[in-house]
Length: 86
Image 1 (tube, rainbow, N blue to C red):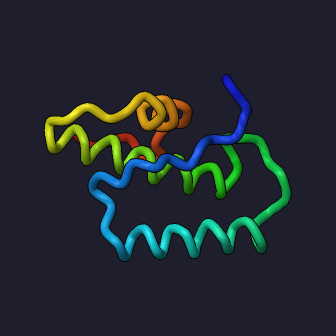
Image 2 (tube, rainbow, N blue to C red):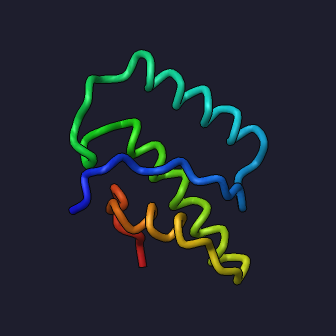
């Protein structure tokens, strides 16, 4: 598994203004007050970036559009915490 940090995706499909503002505040808080460097799977900051990418990917699927390669790559690097119920 690639252990490089996840990118912050620029695509905002499906993300409201309030979500984006709170996301930035939480990311800033995790950068300043969060835990020390951890591996990709256990880092709350990396999980936060992955959650954003996953949400954008699902919004693209719902709209029937194609997400960019960076979004797909970022969303595929981690597993969801909970398995979707079928």
